[in-house]
Length: 106
Image 1 (cartoon, rainbow, N blue to C red):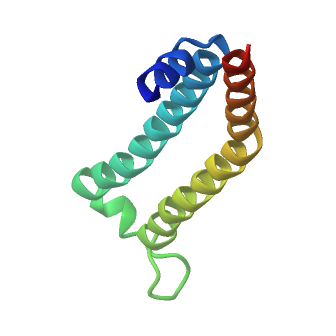
Image 2: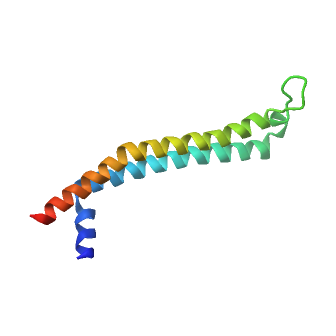
C-alpha cells in the first residue's frame, strides 16, 4: 500500500510541478550563495590590499563589512526560502495530498 501511494504521488502532475519549482528555486539560491562565499574567499586570496583598505580614520577595513554582508546575505536568502516554502511550496504540497487522497477514494 505504501509503495502504491509513493508511486501515485510521484506520478501526479502537481507533484512534478512542485518538485521542478522547488528544485529550480533551491539551486538558484545555492548558486547565489556559492558566488557570495567563493567571491569573498577569492578576494581574500587575491586582493588582500582591497580588503585591507581602512574606512575613515579608524581601524575598520573594507573586509569587515564585506564579510558581514556575506553573512547577512546568507540570513536573508534563508529567510526568503523559508517564506516562499511556507507560502507557495506548502500550498502545492497540500494540493497534491488532497488530489491523491481523492483519487484513492475513487
